[in-house]
Image (tube, rainbow, N blue to C red; front, top):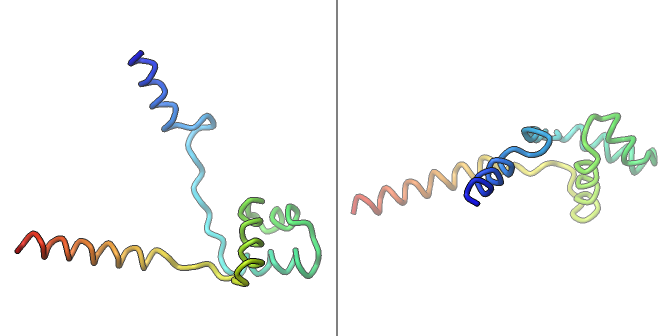
Length: 98
């Protein structure tokens, strides 16, 4: 039984197709091109995504985001997360020193 569970753990870490592909960030220019092709040129979403070179699901989420929030540009999150972790570690250091 333990061997079977160990095999399951290994198979969860490695997907069936191998390693996961790295996420490709779509820059604002590509987002704008996608929205122009889909909304103005009335090109199908799948074809527009292929010509730009992004996955269909990513293109679909960009379109949904534009329709729901009216936002085209990507949100910057890395800097805010990085600052948050710096603040937390500083506060932890202050608590330990007291």
